[in-house]
Length: 349
Image (cartoon, rainbow, N blue to C red; front, side, top):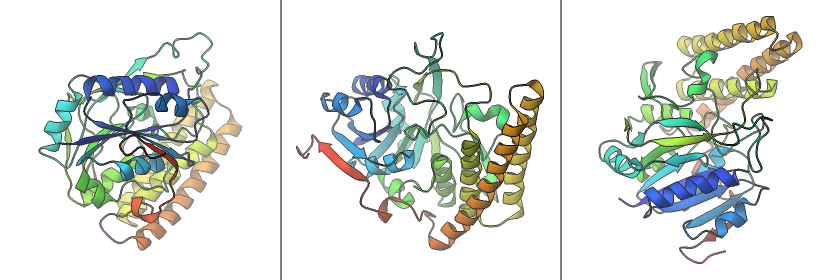
């Protein structure tokens, strides 16, 4: 198996270096591709100075799904893994990838959050190169698990911290979710998916899981395919999200449910139940003094607008791509992701 590893990143130079060190130690023969959003922390120079990165792709977009697709486009392996820049693979990771892909179309494993020195600092400020918790951090999919769990368990995030895959049945389809920053695919599986949906600022891995399930592509789980996630500064009491980020959570949820399943009573009920659960939780924050009534109202407004906008866009997307891929914003739809490319395989700059 020839393995390519795509590492999307944005303003995460120091944690990216740890990720690349782990790849060099535990998967030395893998082709390593860094897809760098418009970082301003010296990421480009750091990566170019290393001899264990085969390709650096510079992109102008700040969304993780664009970065993923940009890396997948230039990968040459017959298997492609995605590893977040703040994840560090462990010693058994490569063997687990091989074993998982021998029996399934995709394989994922546990991600264990570990406290970094930056997270333990008294002032709570992010270190140089870290993405602020409330920013639009696209290079790692910090999306809440909006398809499956209420607000109280959001930090599980696409399998993170789990010892087994998350599975749900939605509109009669059995869906196995995977960790977006610790997953590997057979090349032909990514071709069937047409990569990730670039409409989504968050939730792209969960959308891909829905589409894999509808195309009868299996997702395996391997305990040995483990990674450690370097945590940074603690989030604020309200979870570190602005009202607009709550809006994007629900825009993404409505979009992927309507795009993949159409208008169904179970789909509408699922979105509504999540909104109601989060509304009650946010109201509790107001009562406890952790938030304010005006913030609660602003968040509710953005959630409502997100649901309406995502539903509309999801139905449009469903009509635009009636193929099993359900991806009108995939790899094949554009050719201008990369603004620069440094390829050690060919000497191209």
